[in-house]
Length: 102
View 1 (tube, one colour):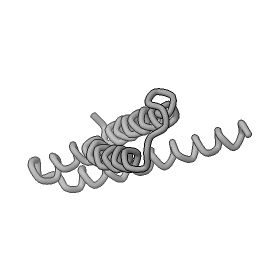
View 2 (view 1 turned 90 degrees about the vertical axis):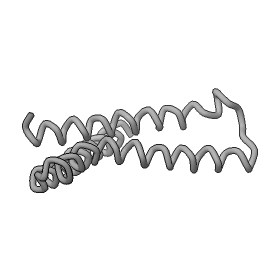
View 3 (view 1 turned 120 degrees about the horizontal axis):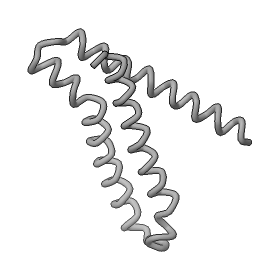
View 4 (view 1 turned 90 degrees about the horizontal axis):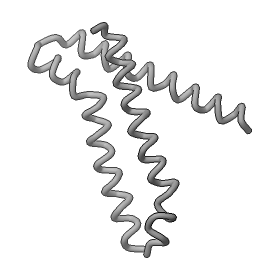
């Protein structure tokens, strides 16, 4: 599979996961009701930790395999660069879309 396609798919995976987390945030109070001052930070920090791990796995899992196991560092770095590029493009499109709606 071409490197750019891998980067695109990884960026799409990140946007999909981020969208799920945003959906959770948008509906959490409706689903669980108001939370006390102790529970909410624990949930938020735990979700942050899990999200960092999941996003790291999505964006870096395959490049790490390429870099360390298959000994293809240039390909791994290019995939990370393409993932970053596509993620930036998606962010720009989302911001532009929100600006147009308002």
